[in-house]
Length: 357
Image (cartoon, rainbow, N blue to C red; front, side, top):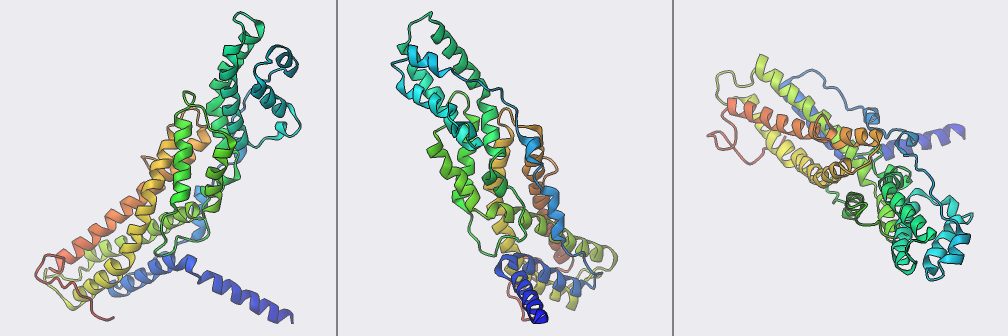
């Protein structure tokens, strides 16, 4: 009985590994295996899914910002601010046991509501009163804290961490971009960039944005897709470059049987298979990297968060730039190889239709 259970468990693992979530990686591996056989190249290095752990988020404690507590005495407000019931209500909620346990994302919405209530209350108070001076001072301090509150809202939320956490699987072939999650991240970035001139919206407006990040699996899968494609494209480029350098498939500069087989691999398995997947990941990544770069420039970003975002989508030495460079290198390797055989598009030997393998 125990052996039967173990056998069924192993079967489930195998089925999970061959599921649609891994079809993007399977496509890459199949392509490289075919290219390797035709080039008679040494065995390529398989993609190690554990390598994406280098894109793990830093510990939360390294990404949170210490914020000095600024509280308003409710008793004074009850006596002197009778014309500000909404402000009284917000302060009462914050001083309650539940209010003291606000999640970071809720705190961002609360601070926006509180500052709006303060702005609405101040015109009703007499000038030169101690309370008005106190509230003006508190409003100024809280505005100065808004960037820290914003970053704690992101870095302290499971939703933001989920979206930027690498996944076990790559994006599936043909998967459409999750516009809801990307738009939510874009909206959050816009909120942070407009602080403190524009106050953050209420918690009711913010909650759907964080939920969209948590509901999406594409952020993590995109990271894994970029890493796996970068690896496989570079492996393929190295095979073609070494073969062209040491044993060119068309040594006399004219088409050979091996050259035509390579042309078939290019048409059928690169242009007709891998390249559309590369284009799909590039399309997903363009909006993603643009939003991550916008986040990097928001004031008050903790150093650990900035370094992580730069590692993913920075303008120097990032996962995104590595993917773009690997893509360009692979295209160039194919162009060089086919040109040397007079089998490239536009040359006399070009045949846009593939033969059956």
